[in-house]
Image 1 (tube, chains in turn purple, red):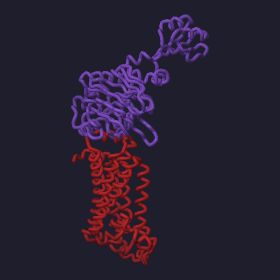
Image 2 (cartoon, rainbow over the protein chains, first blue to last red):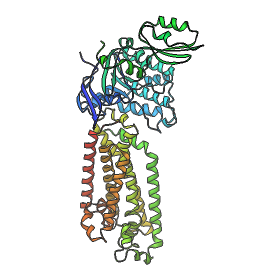
Image 3 (cartoon, chains in turn green, brown):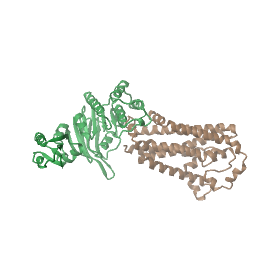
Image 4 (cartoon, rainbow over the protein chains, first blue to last red):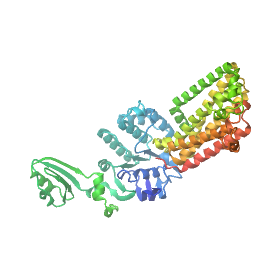
Length: 301
Length: 262
């Protein structure tokens, strides 16, 4: 099978600093692949190697079957890239950006650019320097999608977008993969990634710590519950419950980490006159701290 | 070769380019127009009498009241090279290292264009900027005939080409240093020091004996340090300046190919 992206033992070091270490992954065509990790984990460095912006210190990469260093022109013709911390030319408007870059990329359908601009409600006629971070990001998204590339490599694409636009972005991702195209999505927004991706890989300090199907990985995550009560409660009321760890206790407030069944926890909370309850999945930091220890550094599926 | 990236860079710098060109043209016209007022002021020549070190520091040699001497002292030996260097070195440092630091180069480097072509297009943008500035100054000097600034037009043209080439040399050296380091500030610092040293060597060589052999290493010597506005740039001057251009351009291609972009 030919993969949209394939890396073998891909490594990158800057002097003594090992940014990416022996990274091997495969991305199948026609799927959204989430690439997760906190800042400094090596996500952007990996992406830059895939996009021929940086040379690998060792290992191999193939993007759409192409060698990024040798076939960079062909690769850039078929792949769109949205950099993390996108910067635009300050004096140029959104329209100027899309016109110029569509031309430089070899052309794009003007009607599709217009449609994208409308969907993301992009301010197209003001210089980039006068736009908010979110508006600049929307221009970047239009530039990435406008040529309908075979593969999109998006580094933190929803930074600065409001929830409505994030929703629109997710719709666009689904439409893109429905067309048989592939999206490689780097993010540290776990919720977003869980909603849109088919498979994910997580790297930490340049090394892969997990790769697999989102639902399978999510099952291993502890759920977080915070509850506030009318009166102080005892720690033992929760500690004795199976699969429950009390992570914080402050008089009337308790924070719990749940790996087992949630029903007994809810019953225990309800028995102590709760005034507020917040339940959420673990965020990425908690995921790394609690879940992705070396023991799970293997493929779930 | 497509020049779309050259056009983009030129478009982004059109305001500063116009300011350089209009400012320099106006300055040149003022210098030229003032010449009739000073052409008989023999006291001016006291400054350069006997190979004055102070005059040498400003790159001035020979008679200040002759058309060539007047232009050399007020434009050719100092202000014109300085402005063309400001423009070329500024662009050279910004074109690769600066745009990479600003996070903009990744947008251009992920276009279906070879890195080598990107370098050539940026060099072409530098040529266009330096050529426009040089042409404006040259034209203003040539109209100086109406103000008694009579110089052989061929000397003006060849001397202008020599300054243009020197601007390109330092600009491309800046682009090469920027491609090697990826740092705009370091590039500006290093190339400015190099240009200053080159200027000092060329201008002080006539009065400092031990500097004389070193002057051949100075790009200023090959472009303005040999009274090119008075006697025209020689083929040797132009060959040296073109050779340095080509070597620097080769350096840019070589370093940029290996540069890790952000």
